[in-house]
Length: 230
Image 1 (spheres, rainbow, N blue to C red):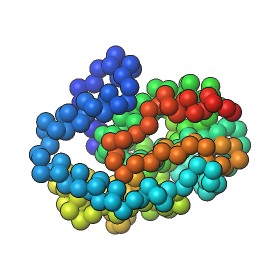
Image 2 (image 1 turned 135 degrees about the vertical axis):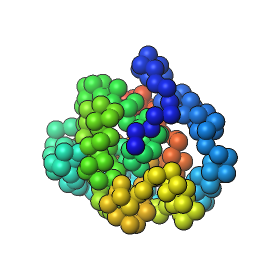
Image 3 (image 1 turned 180 degrees about the vertical axis):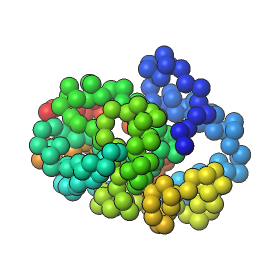
Image 4 (image 1 turned 60 degrees about the vertical axis):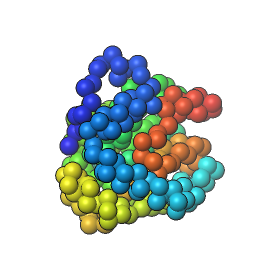
């Protein structure tokens, strides 16, 4: 399930911004994905925007809920323990089948040393199973924990969860994106992609969420927020 439509260049991958990488992926999608399928994905995004789902997300200044989730190796990871030592950057993603989630995590992986030097830990959270998270980490050589959020229980507390509409479920199924198998439940629910920075007192310092799954914050912007104060 690794997204392979992009001919990867090591040099380009190390130097391009995330937005530049996404532009190329969008161009490939426009080239290879039928227009009627692209229109259905655009409709799903527009429907979520019309519902103003971003108005319900956990905002800056709120207290982030504590959690304990299993990582890609099936080991429990506690937010309390992570925040005892460092601030925490959380990337909520849809899953390893999403090329934009892959691109974001690969970009965050490249800045991991700088992020840690700025006094933060990084985790990615998705509803996919532990096994799927292991596959994702292994395929993309990620160096930070991928946590499984069964039933989107934590994402729901962050106000990020929606149900994939029926017309989009059909598209995913035809593309062999079997969310009931990938996520281990029949809900067809996903989080909208979101990036949070949580201070050591559990206060939300930064929040970015968008129902448009092709819109993600630049890693450099995350670093800038972190460097603005420990």
